[in-house]
Image (cartoon, rainbow, N blue to C red):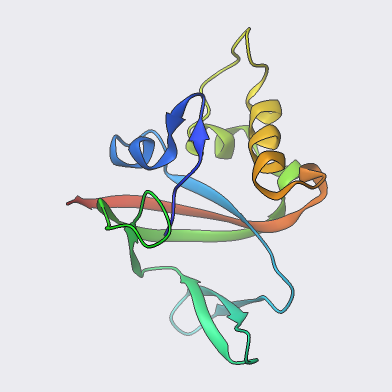
Length: 143
């Protein structure tokens, strides 16, 4: 999983490695499918690739490499614990803290203001109305 943004001036992948970031919000794209399996209690997000093939994007219980950027070597490993669907504007204060946003900063605003500013920088849209997934994880190793 790629963590290439900055939060309060710190690279997000570093926040993952030090345990200050244990959740990430990712935008929903056209063709995404959110599935819950009652049998084994897994939550899976599927995405259609360019050829229309369904591929697994995220799944609870699976481990993923922490990458500072696309194509870069992993610096750690995380395991997904939970995935929830929600718009960016409805992310809770607890989730924003897990995202790595510290409490109010006089020079930068509230957690929510900073979170939405980061999303707008990345996606260039009205971030508060974007639909997506909050992916909660735990760090299982540093490489």
